[in-house]
Amino acid sequence: MTGSLHGMTVLDLSQQLPGPYATFLLASLGADVLKVEPPAGDPARRFDPPMFERVNAGKRSVFLDLKSPADRERLLELAAGCAVFVEGFRPGVTARLGCDEKAVREVRPDVVYCSISGMGQTGPLAGHPTHDLSLQAMAGILGDAGKSDRIGVPWVDLGTATTAALAITAAWHAGGGTFLDLAMLDVATAWSSVKPLAVTEPEATYGVVGAKDGAVALALLEDHMWLRLCTALGWPDDPALATYADRRGHATEIRARLESAFARYTVAELIALAHEHDLPLGPTDATGDPDTVAQLQARGRDNSPAARHTPLPLNLIAPQES
Image 1 (cartoon, rainbow, N blue to C red):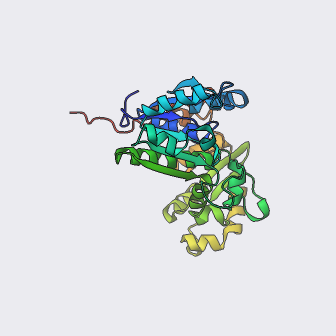
Image 2: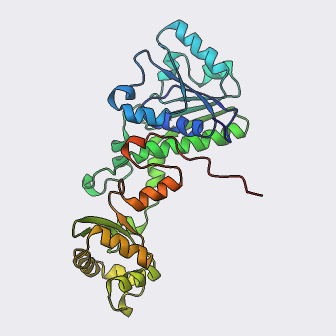
């Protein structure tokens, strides 16, 4: 693959999701990624084969037993030829395996060494086991007393991976010689600090609303969008609800009116109404929605479950036509 990272060579010891997704992003941009797996393979091969295929597309694999002195030596030989080294073990594990930053830097002084862990390399919980859901809880995402459930994608894993890919790219372009300590908890805490009111406080026109035969997702905040919604539903223009702040103060009342109004329409009718009045509304399951399918196909994408392992469309900048 070619791209803006053509020439970057990556040795990836990470498993499961955060590290592999980070190096998948790098591979999608043109990096040459060699994935190092234990003799039995990355555990994701067994417990989630579709995810494994999705996040390891565009990579090569080599199987090494890092408990073997010969394979440890082979790993360092490979590391000597790579500009980036990525690992996702708990702190201290790479030192025991003979491939910590010091060991790798001896064979490749300008390496970008990226350690991805749940808690980071320092602190009283540095060695504590974690997964996406527990980190969501620690970052305050699950709400009071953990009443809210996790969202549909492991966003802490993916957010950490994206942050790692960005940091690695910046360090590589700067000439290397960098150690990156990527803690999933740090990323989760940073991301959770950006909480729009629409997703943290009661909001009548930002959420899922029932229809006659299903439900739709309505994401309406702006005043001019509110006026369009009123026109679409035949509601009078109420000056008391003209601003976002006004509507927030009447959220319960508006929500009840919306639920009553939407219950008279099918999902297809509401989508048609949204297109007619230019409203931010769509189906809650867009897998078979013809408009969504057409949009994704126009972008060279496919949202069917069978095709979700395809590489990301990171070639976003096309040459200008003369």
